[in-house]
Length: 195
Figure 1: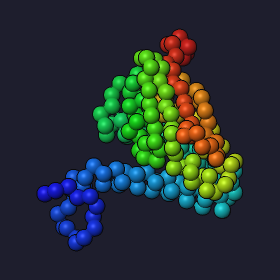
Figure 2: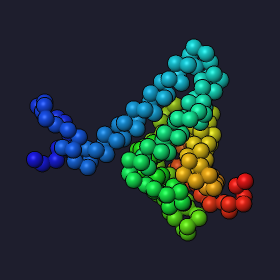
Figure 3: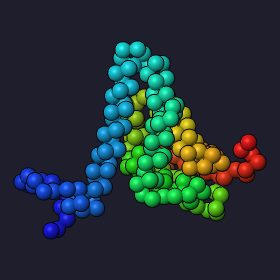
Figure 4: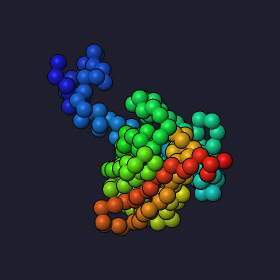
Protein backbone atom coordinates (compact mmCIF):
# COMPACT_ATOMS: atom_id res chain seq x y z
CA UNK A 1 0.00 0.00 0.00
CA UNK A 2 1.31 3.47 -0.87
CA UNK A 3 2.06 5.94 1.88
CA UNK A 4 -0.79 8.34 2.44
CA UNK A 5 -0.13 12.06 2.24
CA UNK A 6 -3.13 12.87 4.45
CA UNK A 7 -6.37 11.33 5.68
CA UNK A 8 -8.77 12.83 3.19
CA UNK A 9 -11.26 10.49 1.58
CA UNK A 10 -13.13 7.57 3.08
CA UNK A 11 -12.77 6.21 6.60
CA UNK A 12 -10.37 3.24 6.81
CA UNK A 13 -10.88 1.01 9.88
CA UNK A 14 -7.39 -0.50 9.46
CA UNK A 15 -5.33 2.68 9.10
CA UNK A 16 -2.47 3.34 11.55
CA UNK A 17 0.21 6.00 11.79
CA UNK A 18 2.69 3.86 9.83
CA UNK A 19 0.48 4.22 6.75
CA UNK A 20 1.36 7.92 6.37
CA UNK A 21 4.25 9.54 4.55
CA UNK A 22 7.18 11.35 6.14
CA UNK A 23 5.61 14.68 5.14
CA UNK A 24 2.34 13.71 6.81
CA UNK A 25 4.23 12.74 9.97
CA UNK A 26 6.00 16.10 9.99
CA UNK A 27 2.67 17.93 9.73
CA UNK A 28 1.27 15.81 12.55
CA UNK A 29 4.36 16.45 14.71
CA UNK A 30 4.05 20.21 14.14
CA UNK A 31 0.34 20.03 14.99
CA UNK A 32 1.11 18.16 18.22
CA UNK A 33 3.72 20.77 19.16
CA UNK A 34 1.29 23.61 18.54
CA UNK A 35 -1.42 21.70 20.38
CA UNK A 36 0.45 21.45 23.65
CA UNK A 37 1.84 24.98 23.40
CA UNK A 38 -1.68 26.31 22.83
CA UNK A 39 -3.04 24.26 25.73
CA UNK A 40 -0.28 25.74 27.93
CA UNK A 41 -1.22 29.25 26.77
CA UNK A 42 -4.94 28.59 27.38
CA UNK A 43 -4.17 27.28 30.87
CA UNK A 44 -2.10 30.38 31.68
CA UNK A 45 -4.86 32.64 30.33
CA UNK A 46 -7.50 30.91 32.47
CA UNK A 47 -5.35 31.27 35.59
CA UNK A 48 -4.60 34.91 34.72
CA UNK A 49 -8.30 35.69 34.27
CA UNK A 50 -9.19 34.25 37.66
CA UNK A 51 -6.12 35.07 39.76
CA UNK A 52 -4.12 37.68 37.84
CA UNK A 53 -1.01 37.76 35.68
CA UNK A 54 1.49 37.37 38.54
CA UNK A 55 -0.11 34.13 39.74
CA UNK A 56 -0.33 32.86 36.16
CA UNK A 57 3.39 33.45 35.59
CA UNK A 58 4.33 31.97 38.98
CA UNK A 59 2.35 28.79 38.32
CA UNK A 60 3.71 28.56 34.78
CA UNK A 61 7.24 28.67 36.18
CA UNK A 62 6.34 25.91 38.65
CA UNK A 63 4.86 23.69 35.95
CA UNK A 64 7.86 24.09 33.67
CA UNK A 65 10.76 24.21 36.12
CA UNK A 66 9.90 22.72 39.52
CA UNK A 67 9.19 19.21 40.73
CA UNK A 68 10.34 15.81 39.61
CA UNK A 69 8.45 15.60 36.31
CA UNK A 70 8.35 19.28 35.36
CA UNK A 71 7.74 20.34 31.77
CA UNK A 72 11.40 21.03 31.12
CA UNK A 73 12.41 17.55 32.30
CA UNK A 74 9.75 15.93 30.11
CA UNK A 75 10.73 18.01 27.07
CA UNK A 76 14.43 17.28 27.44
CA UNK A 77 14.02 13.57 28.18
CA UNK A 78 11.19 12.01 26.16
CA UNK A 79 12.46 13.06 22.69
CA UNK A 80 15.95 11.73 23.46
CA UNK A 81 14.51 8.41 24.63
CA UNK A 82 12.24 8.16 21.58
CA UNK A 83 15.15 8.84 19.19
CA UNK A 84 17.73 6.73 21.09
CA UNK A 85 20.02 9.68 21.82
CA UNK A 86 22.34 8.41 24.51
CA UNK A 87 25.24 10.06 26.23
CA UNK A 88 25.80 13.17 28.24
CA UNK A 89 28.12 15.14 26.01
CA UNK A 90 27.71 18.25 23.87
CA UNK A 91 26.93 16.19 20.79
CA UNK A 92 23.99 14.50 22.60
CA UNK A 93 22.61 17.91 23.66
CA UNK A 94 22.80 19.32 20.13
CA UNK A 95 21.23 16.18 18.66
CA UNK A 96 18.35 16.66 21.11
CA UNK A 97 17.87 20.29 20.03
CA UNK A 98 17.71 19.23 16.39
CA UNK A 99 14.84 16.80 16.97
CA UNK A 100 13.01 18.28 19.98
CA UNK A 101 9.41 18.81 18.83
CA UNK A 102 9.06 21.76 21.22
CA UNK A 103 11.82 23.56 19.32
CA UNK A 104 12.21 21.98 15.88
CA UNK A 105 8.43 21.59 15.64
CA UNK A 106 7.93 25.38 15.57
CA UNK A 107 11.29 26.77 14.48
CA UNK A 108 13.88 26.49 11.75
CA UNK A 109 16.98 25.57 13.74
CA UNK A 110 20.62 24.99 12.92
CA UNK A 111 23.02 23.36 15.37
CA UNK A 112 26.79 23.39 15.03
CA UNK A 113 29.33 21.38 16.99
CA UNK A 114 32.65 23.22 16.73
CA UNK A 115 34.55 20.88 19.07
CA UNK A 116 33.66 18.31 21.71
CA UNK A 117 32.88 20.99 24.29
CA UNK A 118 31.40 23.85 22.22
CA UNK A 119 28.19 24.08 20.26
CA UNK A 120 25.80 26.66 18.83
CA UNK A 121 22.07 26.84 18.24
CA UNK A 122 20.76 29.35 15.72
CA UNK A 123 17.01 29.79 15.41
CA UNK A 124 16.46 31.23 11.95
CA UNK A 125 12.68 31.41 12.08
CA UNK A 126 10.37 30.89 15.03
CA UNK A 127 6.60 30.54 14.72
CA UNK A 128 6.18 31.31 18.43
CA UNK A 129 7.99 34.63 17.97
CA UNK A 130 5.82 35.38 14.94
CA UNK A 131 2.66 34.74 16.99
CA UNK A 132 3.94 36.97 19.79
CA UNK A 133 4.65 39.70 17.23
CA UNK A 134 1.03 39.46 16.03
CA UNK A 135 -0.10 40.09 19.61
CA UNK A 136 2.17 43.15 19.76
CA UNK A 137 3.00 42.44 23.40
CA UNK A 138 6.72 43.17 23.63
CA UNK A 139 6.80 42.52 27.40
CA UNK A 140 5.36 39.03 26.88
CA UNK A 141 7.77 38.38 24.00
CA UNK A 142 10.74 39.35 26.17
CA UNK A 143 9.46 37.19 29.03
CA UNK A 144 9.04 34.15 26.75
CA UNK A 145 12.25 34.60 24.75
CA UNK A 146 14.60 36.02 27.35
CA UNK A 147 13.41 34.42 30.60
CA UNK A 148 11.50 31.22 29.86
CA UNK A 149 13.55 30.09 26.87
CA UNK A 150 16.88 30.85 28.53
CA UNK A 151 15.86 29.08 31.73
CA UNK A 152 14.44 26.20 29.68
CA UNK A 153 17.70 25.78 27.78
CA UNK A 154 19.70 25.98 31.02
CA UNK A 155 17.57 23.39 32.76
CA UNK A 156 17.18 21.15 29.70
CA UNK A 157 20.93 21.11 29.13
CA UNK A 158 21.50 20.26 32.80
CA UNK A 159 19.39 17.10 32.38
CA UNK A 160 21.83 15.99 29.67
CA UNK A 161 24.90 17.14 31.59
CA UNK A 162 25.07 19.61 34.50
CA UNK A 163 28.37 20.90 33.11
CA UNK A 164 26.75 22.39 29.99
CA UNK A 165 26.67 26.18 30.17
CA UNK A 166 24.28 28.31 28.10
CA UNK A 167 25.08 31.78 26.80
CA UNK A 168 22.65 33.86 24.75
CA UNK A 169 24.49 35.48 21.83
CA UNK A 170 21.43 37.16 20.34
CA UNK A 171 18.00 37.39 21.93
CA UNK A 172 14.90 37.44 19.78
CA UNK A 173 13.50 40.87 19.01
CA UNK A 174 10.14 41.80 17.59
CA UNK A 175 10.28 43.09 14.03
CA UNK A 176 13.77 41.76 13.36
CA UNK A 177 14.24 41.01 9.65
CA UNK A 178 17.80 39.65 9.37
CA UNK A 179 16.79 35.97 9.26
CA UNK A 180 17.98 35.16 12.80
CA UNK A 181 15.43 34.89 15.59
CA UNK A 182 18.00 34.10 18.30
CA UNK A 183 21.39 32.48 18.79
CA UNK A 184 22.86 30.51 21.70
CA UNK A 185 26.30 29.19 22.61
CA UNK A 186 26.84 26.07 24.70
CA UNK A 187 30.10 25.19 26.42
CA UNK A 188 31.13 22.33 28.65
CA UNK A 189 32.53 23.59 31.95
CA UNK A 190 35.47 21.87 33.57
CA UNK A 191 34.45 19.41 36.28
CA UNK A 192 36.06 21.53 39.00
CA UNK A 193 33.93 24.54 37.94
CA UNK A 194 30.73 22.61 38.71
CA UNK A 195 31.14 21.93 42.41
